[in-house]
Amino acid sequence: MREFSTPATLELPTAGNLTDDVVSNARDFPESVAFSRPGPGGWEDVTAAQFHAEVVAVAKGLIASGIEQGDRVALFSKTRYEWTLLDYAIWFAGAVTVPIYETSSVEQVRWILEDSGARGIVAEGPDHIARVAEARHDLESLTSVWSFADNAVDVLVRLGGDVADEEVEKRRTAIVPADPATLIYTSGTTGRPKGCVLTHSNFMVELGVAVDELERLFQTENASTLLFLPLAHVFARIIQIGCVKSRTRLGHSPDITHLLDDLGGFKPTFILAVPRVFEKVYNTASQKAAADGKGKIFNVATDVAINYSRADEAGRVPLVLRAKHALFARLVYGKLLAALGGSCQFAVSGGAPLGERLGHFYRGIGLTVLEGYGLTETTGALTVNLPDALKIGTVGRPLAGTSVRVADDGELLFKGGQVFGGYWKNETASREALDDGWFHTGDLGEVDDEGFVRITGRKKEIIVTAGGKNVAPAVLEDRLRAHVLVDQCMVVGDGQPFIGALVTLDPESLPTWAEAHGKQGGVEELYDDADLRAEVQRAVDDANKAVSHAEAIKKFVILPDAWTEEGGQLTPSLKLKRGVVMREFHDEVEALYRR
Image 1 (cartoon, rainbow, N blue to C red):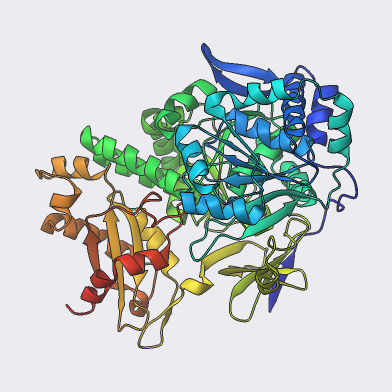
Image 2: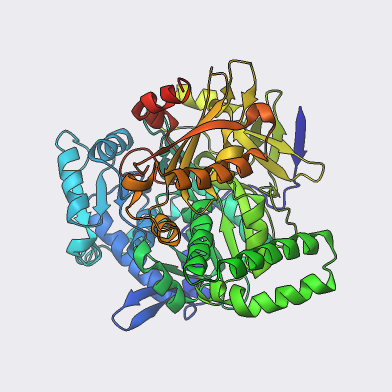
């Protein structure tokens, strides 16, 4: 059993909580800019003192409404400034935040509100309120519902007008590190979501270490980031808390359709995203170059960026390669970086492996993508690549004070102060997940001699063919999905004589490809086109280079229907719900093995 530990640099907290950062910022740096939020004239700054005052005023409203110490309050909204404001106000009132993805169905909303016993909920707008109304008919504990569309913040401020500052401070300071800060419900690729109880201590350990180790992100001059991932996910949440802790200017972009404009106006110095975002940015740029007749130039520029990054990692960049890189930096790379606002030097990627090729591409154009790894149960990051300790293709080394162990079956186990203590009201699931403090991640991986962790697959997703070959689908899927025409894919073959794949097409890239090849129609008309199949076959052939012959995809089927979160095939964090896909496309999978 292989094990690697990174020495602790932080003692477990014995006093205080997450609200202390807001108080100390307002006291010691009252005029520092904590946030920028959208206003009539563009981005408007919010100082540390102003944020503290707003948080206290909203917390008073929660107290006046009847929210007691330890009560749960749900947030059901897109990523926006008010989400962060309410999150801290809930903590100032002594309560516990329960995030709900804004895309959640009525059934999901009902389950989370019922299981958590939430006393109040703040929702985004009419559609969200309608889902809450449908879900709450038998929820006796839910007594208060507010909506951002109906000025929830102003309503709460007016409601708390008579609550004394001393009452808020009494509530706030009563919280100790071991108290729950939030219940985050796993998005659930199978079964009902489970509530992960994350304490103030979990976050304090996580960010106490991560902010220091990622000082080039959080502590550089004019550091800033724009959040566009859902704050209901722990990945965005730890960045939010890390920004408040480090006084890094934070903005929110709730509408992905306006993201490029928001990035251009906000000009973040770093961003965070899931791999699919980085794949889409690259594919969109590639398709645009092809449409403008510059596809060959872009492909050469891509190869130069990748080769430059690899050579730089090896410690020697040949003079000719350096010259080519300088040329494409002016012609190509600068335009890509300008789309991110022009000031972005780093990105943090999590949720799934990015892939070495894209990692080297982005590093080669001047945007270092720091891959990390963690789960909801571990308060986000367990491992992360650092600017000065980076190995592309891995998810980095364990954060300080964190230990990793590779079990005999290849499963990764972790121990550290950021690991949760169990699920909400679910002792059976807690016992299954935790063994003497070691958290069973369910992921398979490797740890090299320097402590860098590589994720190789998901334990429950291992496919065993009829010939007894164990196949981890993630390797093939990540590589296949990187192709410009592929939106999603799922490798199949459990108990079958060979490996197959279901493939869906990218609706944004397909029209450009079709026009370039003299084709007409959309996905429904083209999914069975011979030339299109040949293009996807080339992508499959490329993916197969990463595995042995026995693990290679032998057959595939292109599906006319997209897999989406709304359709139920993807989780809010864009993970594939394999059980749902297998159930819905059972006949297509069976047909692969009848041909």
